[in-house]
Length: 121
Image (cartoon, rainbow, N blue to C red):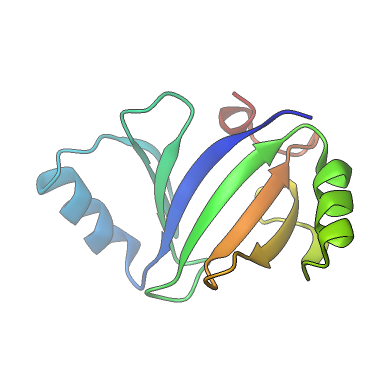
């Protein structure tokens, strides 16, 4: 099984305001600019920093990409960790969600044929 950090995503209320803030204050370049979703070049190849209206404001999610979601599900089940999913994400990936020991929301995604190319890198 391969797994890697994919993104850190912040839930926001206004994607245009957030885009302006991160562009002008931190100088981050926007690599994907969709309604309700702004993806910035984090400076680390293959790792995105996103702001999104798909999450409630002030919520943060750390996401990972894997080539074997079932293996992650098996590990969670064997360890007694509750999770939600698998379900299809808004970007066409199969995803599961769970909380780490401190309550942080973690997602693990597996790309599908419906996933945009920029997420399959």
